[in-house]
Amino acid sequence: MVKKTEELKRIFPAISLSEIESSSSFRYEKLNISIFQDWLSEEEATILLKPLTKTKFNNKFNDLQFNLECKKFIKLYEWIFENYDIYFVDTYDFDRGKNSDIYKIYKIENVQHFRGLYEKSLNDIEKFQLLLPEIELIYFSGYDFTDTIMFNNKELIHSIIEELKANNLHLLY
Image (cartoon, rainbow, N blue to C red; front, top):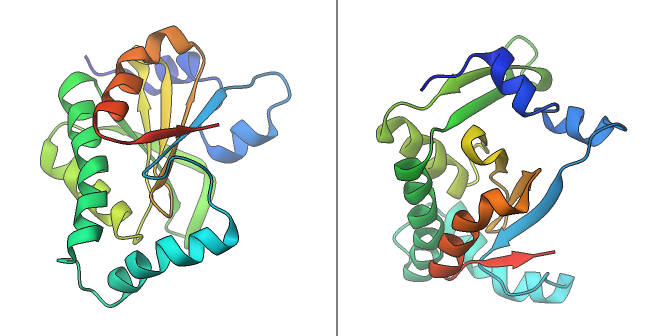
């Protein structure tokens, strides 16, 4: 069922990242999803991310380790698409050439559109933000193989947590 922007704003009192960060009356719980079991120190990040980063920026996307790590997220993204209605939050202001508080919300209707979003994200070309109204969850793609979810009710997101664990992804607090 396609929800109108007004309905989505009722479910999600704050949608854009700046609204979320500046709200004093409303707070989401936040979890990070990563290929890593713990937050990395600067030294660990240099050691563990350098080969992946070098591979990405040399446009050698066929690198085995890079692909293995991407597949963990791809499986999660495809599971989300198969199980929930997904809305893309477009915060990019084309007139000013940067992200802004002004946004448009689009329902993702086909897997090809969604695949284009997550492939750009995994290659650090462009990040995305999704709304999953059924479980009141906001999903932010991130850098360095770490995404963020924000939610109101932990009971509603139990299935997504189980799925990310099944894909060898880890929760970072």
